[in-house]
Amino acid sequence: MPDLNNKTADTELPPDYHIHTPLCKHATGTPADYRAAARSVRMGELCFTDHAPDPSGYDLKHRMTILQFPSYVLMVRSIQDGGSPRVLLGIEADYYPGAEPFLRDWLPHQPFDVVLGSVHYINDWGFDNPDNLYVWDSVDVKGVWRQYFSLVRSLVELRLFDVITHFDLPKKFGHRIRDTDLKEMVQPLLDRIAKAGMAIEINTSGWRRKVAEAYPSPLILNLMRERGIPITFGSDAHAPEDVGYAFDKAVALAREAGYGHFRRYCARQSSLCPLPA
Ligand SMILES: [Zn+2]
Ligand SMILES: [Zn+2]
Image (tube, rainbow, N blue to C red; front, side, top):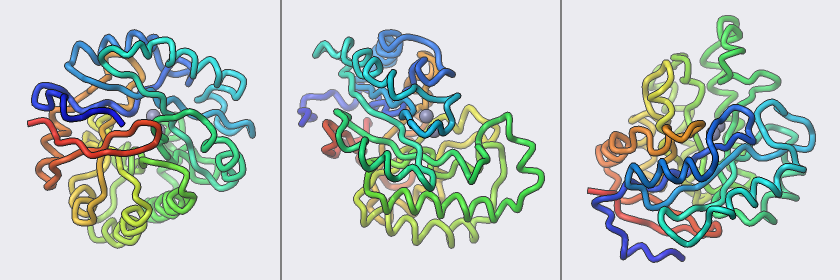
């Protein structure tokens, strides 16, 4: 396990556990560039979490192929020199019904430090893709949220992931539901997540989107804290300048919700660290 006691927690940003690479076909910059960016914002650790390959051909436009996966590992390994910032190897694995056999066979055998779980599709609709934004005009928004959380529930039950990323993603373009409906949907799900021992990421990319709010919302963050669900931080960087994006604001948000610690991972084992002052 990493030695957390020697860290100057009051001068460093928490680790960024959500960083893409050009292998996802929509990011720029080399891993070395991302690491240099992390160093420049006083970050002690970063984790690459590119989109997992999927041999079925699912969403090919946004991920590496299975044949490219070894080069992803090598690319990250090539900048793991033992110096600071420390570099971790992770993955963002998409869940959708039908993904189970591959994920079960493949994920547990890879040398990851942390595995993010995400849901980007409802049936064939990539609901957070700006190219498909028009579809939102012809759907029942509350029904979409319900379907989305039902998929997240299946993701949780698979017990293959460490952290749920962009937890309330359907709000990305501003399609919100009433707080009472949201609570009714998420409370049983959060109970399951707490039981599964998973963490939920504070993903700051929401502040770069139309919704102008981090994922998850303060309301959900409070419900998480009540259940003792740990947090990680992720910028969802697709360019080096995104690394650590608005992390000061995210730390303040976590504190407002009553959090005093965040979770770190190493070889898929977790530990708690105090939030920076
Ligand atoms: Zn994602
Ligand atoms: Zn991502």
